[in-house]
Length: 126
Image 1 (cartoon, rainbow, N blue to C red):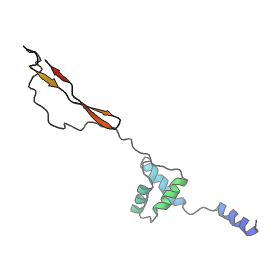
Image 2 (image 1 turned 120 degrees about the vertical axis):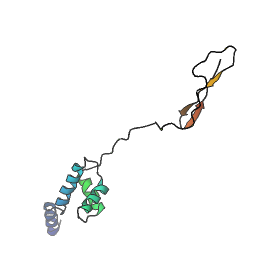
Image 3 (image 1 turned 90 degrees about the vertical axis):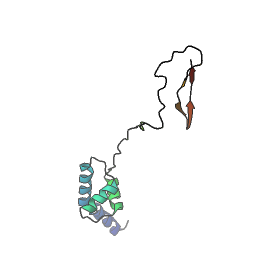
Image 4 (image 1 turned 90 degrees about the horizontal axis):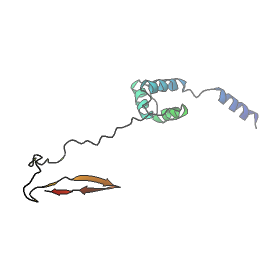
């Protein structure tokens, strides 16, 4: 190995890349926002504070610092409110009859099997 190459690399290992202040500011923004900000939002925050910095630099520094944004868990909510038309309650829960097949009732149920929807409508007649 050439003498100049050895000293070049030795000198290079001893110095920083000049982003120490930026690393500190990125760390503060990251912890201030509960570890939820990624490189895009941190870049925008730095620009709002007056620092002209490239998003690729912020991304590179965050990778070196091993900072990753936490994602919020979205809770599953299946309720969509009252959808469709509600039929009037004609029977008023009086299912007694004097002869067979005077009153017919049904209810529609949606069942998902794999990626298809199937509708079940059992009929009860009295």
